[in-house]
Image 1 (cartoon, rainbow, N blue to C red):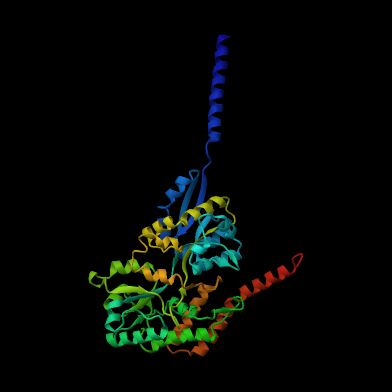
Image 2 (image 1 turned 180 degrees about the horizontal axis):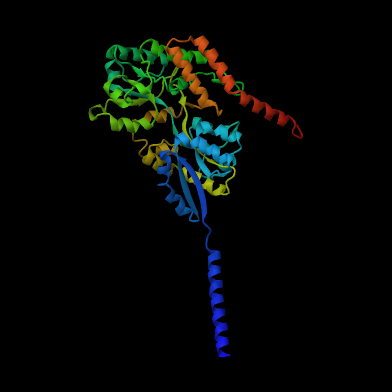
Length: 435
């Protein structure tokens, strides 16, 4: 009898311990795993910023998956088709409209309106606008790049000028003076024929957009685009730029150092490259400057990437809080120091490090004058067609009249699906109750 009592007591005690352990287990906080896709070196850099977020969000663990830029677009589309999207992702600005059309990402304006840390008026206007599709905000700019002039300041001074000119006509005078100085085997500016970005910038500086009628058709036969293409062609016709692709250049840093060309249109990533690759004796002989325009300081294109929240995420609030954290000026400053990516907020530029670099000053100036490209998924395809057409014009294979007519026809074909989708949406709205 005593043995039975002892056995029962032992069982009761073990049951109490088990119940206590279960109770402790049930009160333990649940870890929320946030899946974040980042692209290229930004994935490596952002992992060094996440401990600060996780310290203030102890129940959240962020898992970063690195995508290669060459494969990221296809990876994201495959994930959408397979219902396997992450919670949030870095997104190339030119991809945004495609994801909106697929209803894959959430609108964010309501979250911005409720936020105490993200203010749209603190962002450079052209940068903020790249995330607005049909009047709705779908992303928050993470970092920005744009294109402007890298130049040999010593050769420009030798040609009789203290700084790059603000207008096309004045810049043309400077380029001709440099060409006269350096001789027949060297050039004033490098405009690689396999890059569409320089001509895109010149076209963005014109009043007319490159697409018309709600981005349904090409507008390359407009007088404005023809003016941009004519100026571009003149730089080659006057032997100011070589008829070369960048694959025919050993590397742009060495050739700038050798004086093969004196001006080069590029982005902020090349600041570190020129600092590292130019010899010490030339480190004081180059600088950056904002783009000249048709009649004064010109606009430039908006590059970079944004952060989006996927519609099928089960952790949207935490995803948004991570976007808020990465958007803080102090965190953006760290992001710049670690990876060299330029912040999209004005307040971030007031912190040390960025403001102290003389090569960055021109970028701060240029960021106030940006113009977004048309927000259509076909834009990169359109720009590649523009590049091919421009090369034919430069090499005198086609006239500007014929080239722009053919370009408009090709672009209209590319946008046929867009016209069909917009027409379908309009018919659906017309048949909605109450309309």
